[in-house]
View (cartoon, helix red, strand yellow):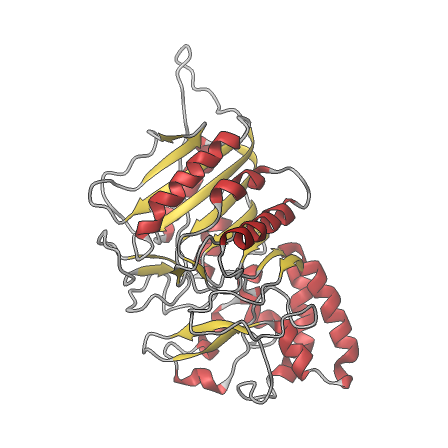
Length: 414
């Protein structure tokens, strides 16, 4: 989803999980809910610094529901920094928020807790059954970058997805869920997703795609930071119900169009769609070229594109989220010609659609305006390559990357 202004959301938020059977009485016999064409779930993890944006985005989503056909379901899990209202599940229908009464919460909990996410998502899938499902993750995020365990308390908003401070406060010290834990939750749901959208920072990582390859068909989002006020839900959400084979193109095009129309300085964010059915071939092609990239320390002396910085628990920062297409353009040699040709073909089957942005989020500490963004340097996704500069970070990404399935697929670990 595309952002609407420059108030940043410096890392991600929220998902879903639970178990339900919904019954209505007719002659004392339970009835099965009618099968919808598609159910789209929006998981809002707003118990953090993004709290003030959540009500406005919910209003946009509710307005968008007026344009959604009755054969579909738009369901939200909403957890915000509020002591007056517990987290809840609601169907957004005909411009109204219809709270679900089958699963209600009497006390607050961490929206980033894997068990609660699984409970909530399972419940929604069973309560609002459909032929296909999509989910939008609303909140903070840092792509694949992980901490010691799935919901470890951290001091800075710098890892994975779904920070929840647990105190109904608008600050970013709390518990996250790492991508491997998130993928495990998704794998235990009644049905895989058709798509996962990340309305959070740094979501489009090749590492994330490989981790979720059995959980979803498509992953849509941005490899960079994104604004805090979220996606253009009013304009884009109805497109998430399209039955077109390449529905993701309409979502990305509308997102980009809305950004250009509303941003006074014409800046936006890069967007892409990853097809998980192509990630195995892409990983195999990358494995052949990874030794070349590992020959160069810290990628010095070259003009390379990176989408942001890793921020460690010890406060250290380092460039990260490199665009793999740009790296290989700079470092591949004539000896790599055959492997590079295969890699580019595999990339085309993996990243099935993308939109470039040469100016975006200029207040992030990274100036994107002078990047040479073109078809030869931009893929729309990021990739991690171990480097000496990461040794000063704690936890050390050179080690934590080994927890990702991608690392084994490309030869970074045995």
